[in-house]
Image (cartoon, rainbow, N blue to C red; front, side):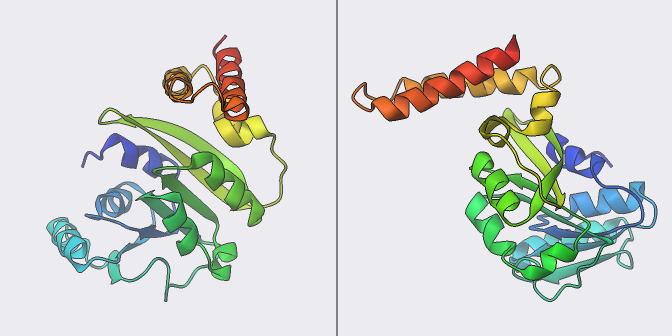
Amino acid sequence: MILPKRLNKIAELIEDDVVVIDVGCDHALLDIYLTLNRNNVFCYACDIKESALEIAKKNINKYKLDNKIEVRCCDGISDLEINNNTIIVISGMGKSTIMHILDDDRIYNARRIIIQSNNEIEDLRNDMINKGFCIDNEVVSFDRNKYYVIISFKKGNKKYSNDELYLGPILIKNNKENSDYFKFLLEKEKNILGTIPSKYVYIRKNIEKNIEKIIQLLK
């Protein structure tokens, strides 16, 4: 089974001998892949839409994995047991929706939380750190002409600089590997700067600072 690149990057962050709660599982492709390619993994394929879960059930049945993947129609992680063997995966949603799902004290029982947000990645890092998590790993996937940042969080306290919150502490360390992503980010910031009128001096200065940070990283 071949996964889309984005889901494959998420799968690479998941080890053997865990329980995976896949929130917004769509068609359960990640869950099927993990069950086939990891040892002793049990997946909960969760979605709030019954229509998505009907396709998930058909896919799971196709691979005869009904006894290893449980389909749940639920809002986020509600009614699911979470312990130190649990990895929560939330991908393909906006930051506000993700943080709403994680407004649950049981998340502190999880081994890790893997998140791919469609927006506000800097704010996501900041919000998770304020909740008492630190960044365990970060990867970038280029899939269907879009960049996706995937972040793995674990419980812990660590201070991060503004640069690390903006660009990602691990992505910065692996700056050569992620140079294409940073080039994309640089062009994005330049385009934004071009839309800001000169009278908004403070906003323009902040964007110019971001541009300089990325230029230094690419040297």
